[in-house]
Image 1 (cartoon, one colour):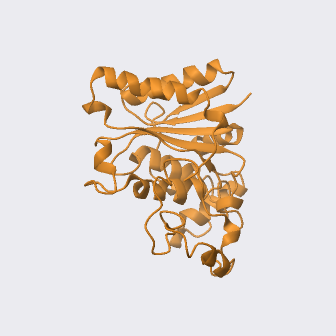
Image 2 (tube, rainbow, N blue to C red; image 1 turned 90 degrees about the horizontal axis):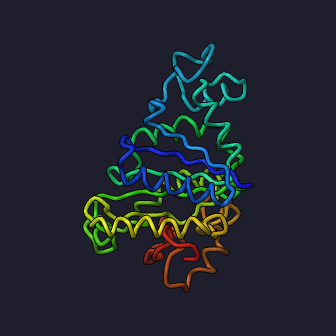
Length: 269
């Protein structure tokens, strides 16, 4: 039985995001999955990463380093209870779905705070365990979110720019960095601007996808062994293999070539 964690961030139970979250719970539960929801607003989850996240003494109070101090606190079992509860949920989960409205081309502050505090140094990543060798390489995750702008506005010629570029810092810089297998995002384009029938159609599309979600192949990212382990530059032989190809490797590592289309939005691209 697969275990699913939904990290959900919306203030209203009557929102489209709530409907998407509720539908995921319904469909995945019907498939026999165990589904748990971290409703961040309902939990009044603290977004700010502060010294209060650590129980007991601080190693260097005059030069406080959140990353260093929380790593030590994690190793010694001194993190605050709200963080350790989320750690337990992640450990149990086979799949984590982040459900949220996109704010300012990124995550809502409360969800970014969850990431800042819960993906703790030592728990979610370390200098030895990154990217394809990351801590969570056996777990899947995905973004499911609404936009305020139309799909055309998030295109390579649209005013907001390419959505693949917008997603790169989140999907690569957070999720892939921690080793997760990242499934293609579920994007609900501007539901607030859509007719009721169209919003219903969006949810039906999500229902259909959810029925096969656990078998989906993840997005492609460049494995860690493609990089020199001292400089973290792409190895010359890997660079040469792609020299004659039309597109770059990824949105972020594009070798001064055109960006690969849909690489952050569809598996196999």
